[in-house]
Length: 135
Image (cartoon, rainbow, N blue to C red; front, top):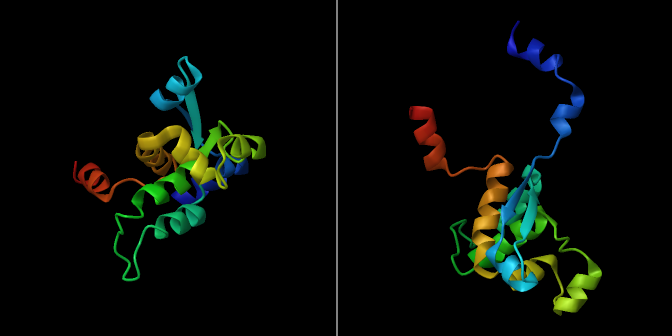
């Protein structure tokens, strides 16, 4: 059986599943006063690509001045619990966007959270991928 034939035997729903993961959050734990986790999910490739591109300059190079905001946008797109899109939460925090809420709640953890979302979404560091392929 070739690979296409094997793919045809897979239930169609498998292709639409969105992977999730729970991460412990020190910042969230500090805010709520007890151990707390954030639930993240994989982000669609087109959305992820667009968000990632917001961190590039006009020449397509990484603009490190935009990196934190870009990671906050990725985090906001991939965090499903707490719901950063909740209007009451946005108003309570005094912020306009889910990315701003992510910055306010998670602070420096944004980078770790966005990295985990990237991994869930299938976007791993090329060096890591190259090392895996070589081994």
